[in-house]
Length: 628
Image (cartoon, rainbow, N blue to C red; front, side, top):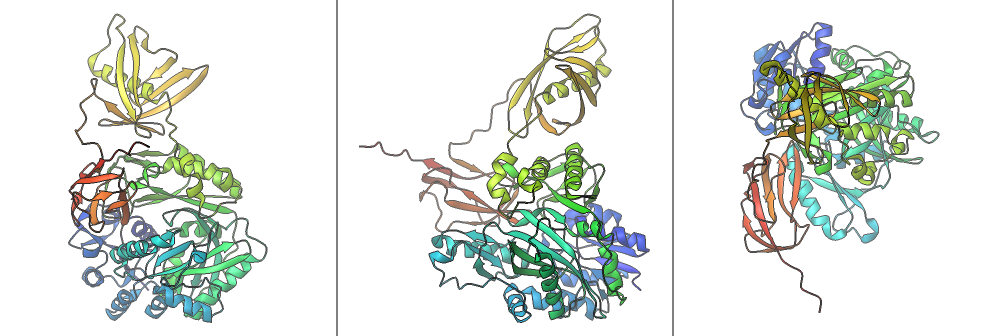
């Protein structure tokens, strides 16, 4: 029996595993980097062991340090979570060699699926349908579009869609660099890219006694940068017979490598055709939707299998429908740029919330941008979508910009609600889904709440005062607002509305006969009014930082990982040319030339840490010649 478990991971998944351990009476051990010394998973574990350093390469990717930590803390088992070393066979061997229980498949099974190229060979032999691998040197225009994929790892890292043959070489290099940084393995391969395909996967669970469960399907088609955003179970609207073929293929894949524990077999589905993508030899981020539908705890089942217990003949009967949305600290309207800062408040009522953050925690630059997963379960798909969208709409997410509004709109989009979505959903609809829609009365509510809060300390005047004004900027679109109000004998008043009630934390306005309530939360100069985020501005505008036209500023904090070949002051560049690559929150972000012209300054140096707004380069625009 496992009595003490170390989770070789961080954040949400570590907290998730610890929750089950507490229910089972198992002691918990966390490992943490210096950046995570005060993180939620560090605080909630029974024991925590420091891994010196901040970057993943120094800490969560150091299997030797993690095994030492497990032994030092008296753990008798290790759970890898997902990401980091979860699909590293050498790490699994090191855990077993140290006399510890490995909560996962055998190292041999991990090895079999670790290389996607090798995995495809095994699946072909097992009769699992798959896409052909292409020779990058032999592809033709007829082969387009293509998908470049990292041979190791997943999560969208090291993946590129190529639509022009001439871009293949650069995309191969970029994917290899990103894969090497994320997984320590820069090998990549090329296969056809299936347009309008759906990402459908099967949860499998197998014991050491020969039983394999196929625990239903999940649809994970809503993706950005090949990373999942919304997942659901079961996959809706599959063609007749496809579900059973998916179960058969997933079971064959698991049996082909003598799989044990929890794993996921992923497929690309279009119509009645399905193609094997990969097998993830670990627990998936989206496992809660399967847990909700089947009424099981996959982590508890992982632990039972690791202890040698036998599964029953088949999984429980599924009921209803479940949907999960990943809440990211990122700005979808600005190329999904990751966001950092203090998460002042996180509350999503009425649904399951798995998170690695608590109110007041700092969101840093070193790790993934996911804040939490919100999961709704209901008797039908339509009810589950409505429940989750409503919960996210009412959620309090105070701090950095997030994708919350995008999630609400996605869950209510007609293409998604009718189950006609595919992996190109955001490519087609992103501009509409991210169009700013701040509440026009939010600035006034913020001003009234602030005025009422100040009045508690300054006292009321006995006579009406002159008009007062405050300035705010909506974070969603950068629009500046100046609002006006007055102190009267009866309280606060404003043009065009009736102030029913005003307090420091809540304002009630009557607008055109409709009464509306605004919850107001202020953190320094940031104000959250319901779902609208504002920045309070000084009474008189301050001069902006002086940057030359054509300046390229860092859109996020991160690390410069490379610059374009031959890039130096004095060279000519064309509008749209990729010039600089930043790595932030485990993803690579490309910064392109804003105009055609000459690079007059280059401050970006590979390895340099930069903050938001750091000047990276300057491009002097060249005027197009007048037509003759």
